Length: 365
Image 1: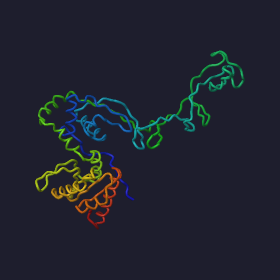
Image 2: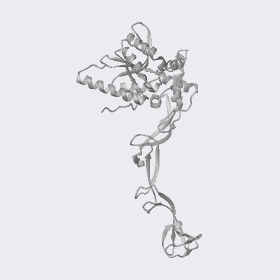
Image 3: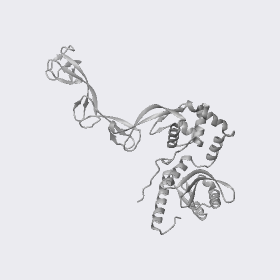
Image 4: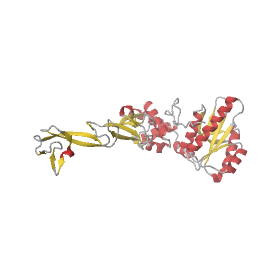
């Protein structure tokens, strides 16, 4: 049985996401320089995120964090401590619940109670057990206790377990992962410091000089329009699929403009290559009403840029007739109900191809 290796990151750990010449870096720094964004603060949820920057940059959560960390490492941003979060050592989520339990039996059925002592008798018990008809009465000798400090005294609070009927000065405090149900101690939790970011004032002059040398047209807006044109797939979907190829040692580029043999330039969602020279382009079918036109165009692009293989991804699933037509044009097709379905099918397809290549019996389709 094949197991899907769904990507955990949207960028290879071994490569820097950006420097000052990177489009995303420049756009963020320009926004900070203009005052459109001042302090970049995190939001706590199932995971830590910076939604203000995610919306501005059209990046997912992981790449946004990577961008902020890289710009801080390069000295363009400063960061200040925001808080410390604790995450589950089992799955990393920060959705945790505090569990106050009995140290003896681990039951959560415990009450915080006040303790009381009959000074003459020396009997110590829960305060409510001394109450009788609106008075304090010793449950051992039945003497009425009238004066605090003479007949009785209050000893403070303890914790009473209703499951095993034991008293404890302190309960046991545990953390429970809401997502996985894993229970652990605070010492076992993974602690991580979270930061807010802002523009480093020492780099303002440098950034202003870079801004002055930038082209007069709104480069960033043109890029956004290029990426977010009608029927274009979500950026996160493209990055998700691209990461599957990266994990298999492909050199992957997204939202590429490639010049074909005809001299015409073509936009492709994913362009992946291997050192062997094999290439693959991936297209995403979003509008089934225009399926034939999209397939024809993708086939023409593949022929013009001389790519080895073409993969068409469709979400949601499409008619068998569309799949059959795509195959007549030399396209491989993967469709699914959602991105996870497609990713699992793609992983299975690539697993099979690797096994076939290892056996030396067939070339991949």
